[in-house]
Length: 105
Image (cartoon, rainbow, N blue to C red):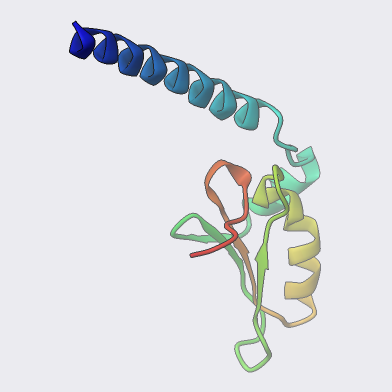
């Protein structure tokens, strides 16, 4: 009798956790900041390498790796990255899962 009660509690807890995780996932996906139409247009000029947008500059100059802000699509930074590329810097706009920067690897 105790085992069946424990199974019910664990099953119910699992369902609740799944529902909460699903809610969080959809919340993060719908509340991300989206790029402007100009940023989207400029992002199409970038080279894509493993979900990273690369704006090519002078290979002899320092490269810049840019991590997006929380809940901000990496394409939102395309205008800025394009200006830096025109100044000669290669810029990498990293794409993070769910538009959240990882705290630890």
